[in-house]
Length: 346
Image (cartoon, rainbow, N blue to C red; front, top):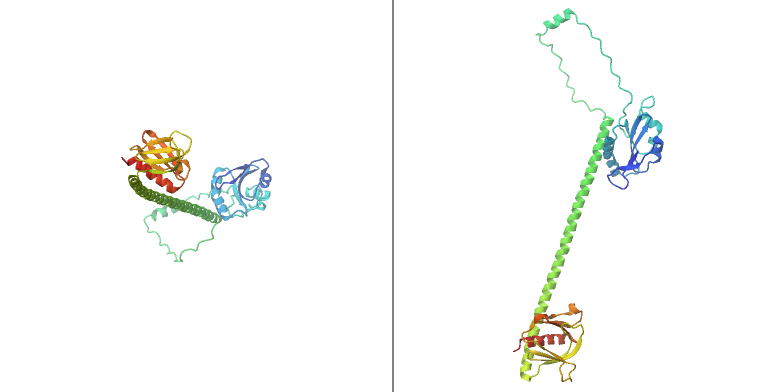
């Protein structure tokens, strides 16, 4: 069996399997972190292959994961760590498995070698019979004070002996685990910092958009108030002009009557509460008229509704709504003031 990570970080899956023994396993190893399980005769070896081209972080992670892999394959007789194919020869692996005579080949990684032969057990020592005199002497000396033993010489603490391979291996695994934990903690902190930065940027954008909307709303209200004041002034002028001259406001305007899809250009005359429409200024017969006294509900800009410059809408009671547009913004404001005058004048 050959196990590996594929393109994942910590998920181990099956790469390949076969019955060709160690030679087939060697031919399928690649320059990455791999775990192998091979049978030679009646013994099993668990291999941890970490290529020399693997980075230090992945090498440390492999040491940690190797413990979990070893726990899965409990029937192995030996665990072999290697970083090159030269360390996985048939003779070396068989020696590690105890299938050849002589001392086993040491593991290049420093792991201890477990011999396959059983440890010899010492033969039991013969029992020496105790003589009666020795028994009596022992009985007589029960109440005798024990002889003073010489005080041990103060030689200080013994120097620590050389570190065993197993201890070195354990320290290596602990260092690898610590390195992996530190890397995971660093990535966690980086992710938290990234999320905090994204949140701050999003909140800043939202605040900026809110400020823009508030500024636009203030500007809109300011313009509406300015237009209202200007229209009120023009309305008063129109009322005074009509009283003095007896003639109302006149001009050209384009109208789309309520319920009609067509636009018509008309000459209008605003007098009192009535707006009369003619085909042109020379026409004496009116085409239509609008009685506005107390019927106007709302007058507002319609440039965004009909996408025509200098347009406005006049809403009347009973859902009646008419669209208009003038030749210039000045004519538009004058016409709106005239509609306001006709709606309010008695």
